[in-house]
Image 1 (cartoon, rainbow, N blue to C red):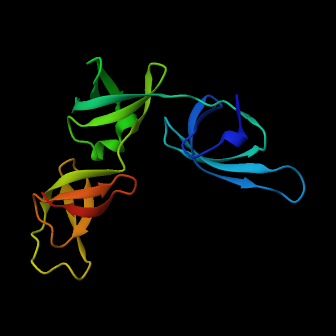
Image 2: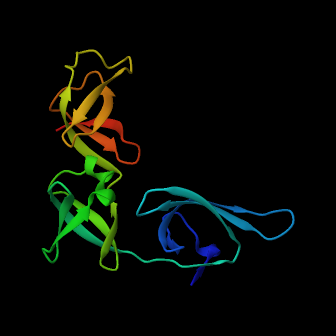
Image 3: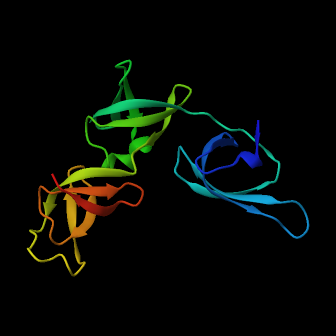
Length: 187
């Protein structure tokens, strides 16, 4: 068993039969009484974020998840189908798990799927992805100074604000944590 001294960002714990990922934590020492650890936890299954405070030295049930590299194959309407790159076994993932990541992942890309036992519980996507613009207003030469933006639809269906000079067919880098445009990729 781990204690509150082992808390760090990204740690997954089992609290009241819920798998929770530590998003952030803060060690607080009160004038009287023992120290406390304030945490912000994200429920892996529901995505709900909760605040919880632990007493210093309290025991925690740390969960180890197994990460498998898997290739995204296709979406069949209800499930996203992934293939284990080592065993070639196909695994369907429920839409709740893949909902946020689906706008950043193209077919045939490799991602890490996290398993708790035999059940897929989370997906790890890279912090940046490169996607092609499929719809946007035409760009104009010289529109690089103002910093103004326009809406663009990317090949996965993601809507993002991009600079005015970008056109259909351009490839852009997107930050998957914020969903924001980072830069244009020259090919």
